[in-house]
Length: 186
Image (tube, rainbow, N blue to C red; front, side, top):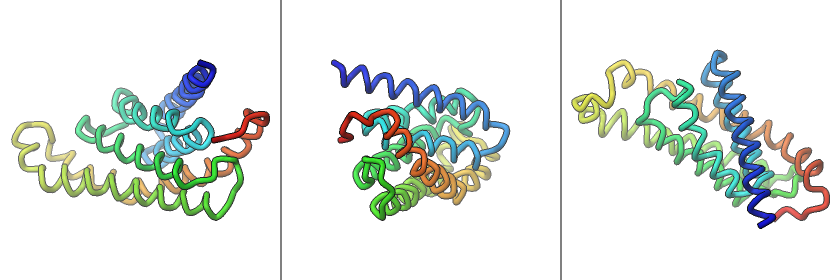
């Protein structure tokens, strides 16, 4: 019961931080907002664990859509998948005891590149490529979005994931020491 309450609390705090950052950075553009989202994702998983990270990864694009940040509802599932890949790689490969090691750096870079690859494939190759004609015909995708999505889901996603992960690698150890000095991180 105590673990469940801790998970709910950590997830709620990370979601509150996520919504705040998405709202405050929306005028600054995708690169700033995306970097902040990736900080939240990485801290959620490095400090709160896989369930916390997955919760934030799932709800982040949904909240972004309702805030008018995610460009189109079609992209929300793709962003969920990309976020979950990012969180999973960090969880599986990073040392969650708060130490900056080569393992942390490798996990961060691999997570960022895999998130970028997943988003690139789903949005650019599938939505804007293979399925574009059918989506346009059904009115689920408009011509201006078809042209804008490749720019939105290209290298800016990689840069945002790298920046966010780098910031999180500095912040997470401080949070872990401050919050869980008496607890062993799993």
